[in-house]
Amino acid sequence: MRWFALIALLASCGRYGFDRKIEADSVSDAGPDDGATASDAARDGAAIACPARYAFAIGSSRYRIGNQTEWPLAEASCEADGAGIHLAVIDNASEMTMLAALTGGSRTWVGASDRKTDNVFLRVTGGVAPFLPWRNGDPSQAGSACAAWDPPSQYRDEQCVQGRQFVCECDGIPVDPTAY
Image (cartoon, rainbow, N blue to C red):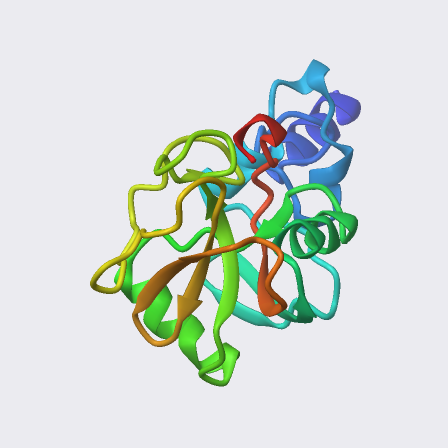
């Protein structure tokens, strides 16, 4: 009977797989057999384990700024930091306003491009980017282009080989290489 009480106590604490909630230090260890993924954790508001240099937080996402480079190298730099890390996908004006403090006002690469289909801007995490606050006249590049953000509030489409600072986002949502 004591063992039953101990098991019941542990189950009520969410240990040993009785609770489906993902803990911050186990997100990267979640396997396909438990049914939970990092993107599930991000959507459910569970903490994601991010590298220490991702110190700027907005909601459940953490961010860092990278040095000037081309868009493809910027995305590769973010992805090299770990699973669920990519160029920032800015979803709304509120997130954009809060991130502006991190950029120092410099033009910044973000996680959207039309490298697959001209004028169809896809997020690096997949799907059409629903929030694209273009400046007047943009998108204007013919052919492949990437989204550059002019803080505080406007995007430009630019040749992806331009050197720009970039912002990485750690949110646990995997990248979709078919999108870029």
